[in-house]
Image 1: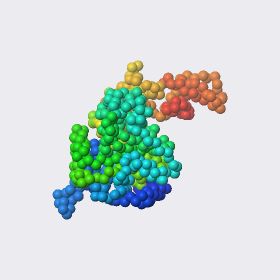
Image 2 (image 1 turned 90 degrees about the vertical axis):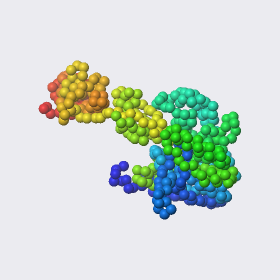
Image 3 (image 1 turned 120 degrees about the vertical axis):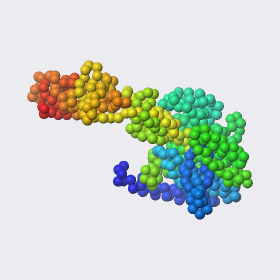
Length: 326
Length: 190
């Protein structure tokens, strides 16, 4: 691409039209299902504490904030949407831009579009069915649906038990499966699990089908409930199509005290890795205290979905202007 | 030497790996939505020429390699080393057989070569894309055939052997493409 062509969009006009029709079908799907479309602030005083996600930071200065009010750009609309649920909104969805610092590659752009929705009364299994229904509405071909537990995926591909294997066993599995150039890597247990999943398992998931991976290790619960004890698993799922991670969902944690423990643990982990801590969302904690209806929620990457629907292998092909042109 | 974080990785960046200078060929960012990000990198070891893959945790830093490429004039070979001179500073360096490697058979005195220096020492020597060399030996008996079918082997002044058309004779100069090792044309004598 020459410098002179940089003003042009990175996606084709045909792609923009397909994208517009996908967005319209999504809105019609939720309209028919009686799920309310909402909008929530993109900028917030609070940020996600997730140790693997970094937020952009900005500042408002003006009336009521002469000294400047630090604000974080959302990495997902999860916290304000849960506050709406706690305020008795009923089922809600949102299509919005989210922002993640430090993420750029064939499947990553630092700003991207999420579809996020919440279903009171659903658990993660019922929500997986609805995700599959929506994706098949948008897909040219009807994709068969596969549900695979995290443990089954590791067992089938690597003959490893992800819930009980030691770091050394996980490292050995990586070496035995000829993952190149990993001899010097120093990772914690979840780091090794993520390496094995993203490098050795993901590429084979969702080939000519939708694969839902569910029951994640409790250590990777994020904002999901944890259930069972042998082993304890997070009631969390991810959807893969053509080896690409499309969506992440939870049977949502509704325990304010547990939520606060996880925020603190995340911030401690951020400190240990030399990264700044972020302010915990006090209003989310108060809302959970007030009471979150039992619900499941999911975030689905619209750009990634467009990639798999159209067989594109670079995210820039499905967004009007990628970072290079932004 | 500076160190580079994985955020600075791109094709052509020179880094140190296991004590050897390397050049990044490809850099892929791999990150689960919730979890550790990695950079999966394809790298060429500049000393051995081997291509290898390496996985880094995103955000890690690696030491940079003091590697640069420069045009240098080939001077002579003393049996152990090949000597090159910077045409501007007149500074001289010597390259060993590992650095010169297959290029040796194309090196003619005075020719400008691309020399890759690591900490000031040559590790790769690339001959000019085209060289003009005289034929020191070839079968003289096949004069008159200009069809060029098949051709014949000819030994050049540097020791390289290339296939030439049948009309090429001992003492003539020819132009050769060093990337393919193929005859291009007859050259006028200097």
